[in-house]
Length: 126
Image 1 (cartoon, rainbow, N blue to C red):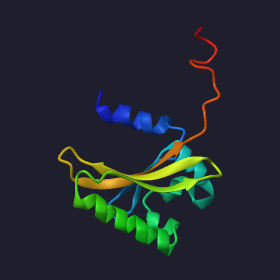
Image 2 (image 1 turned 180 degrees about the vertical axis):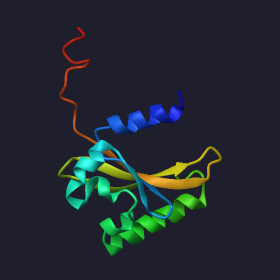
Image 3 (image 1 turned 180 degrees about the horizontal axis):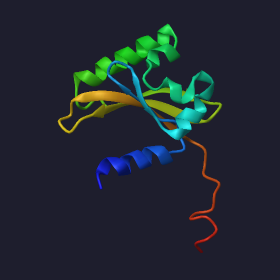
Image 4 (image 1 turned 90 degrees about the vertical axis):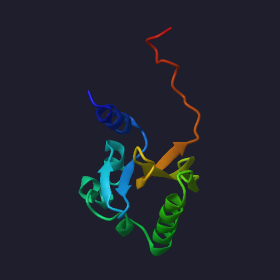
């Protein structure tokens, strides 16, 4: 089985929305959480459309500048973009690179800061 099947499963099981874009800012994939989160904006229908249509001019300018920064060096792969206090999460833009390190796209990574309230391993492992 190809590694890509496993990687897609990892993305699809994430509890955070993941929207993957190519260098033309075209949305090429949304995980189920992203489809649900952005349902009012079109959900699955956003695939194939420009991410820049979903943001204001200021945000678009910042997105474009970050992509240019990603292109400057293979070391430029992650940048903090904002903290969402309502959901207590930090948000980052992450570079996506091919096996040679060439930039091929990007995505937005959400990292929640809330303490986990579930029991370790659930209730079925004691």
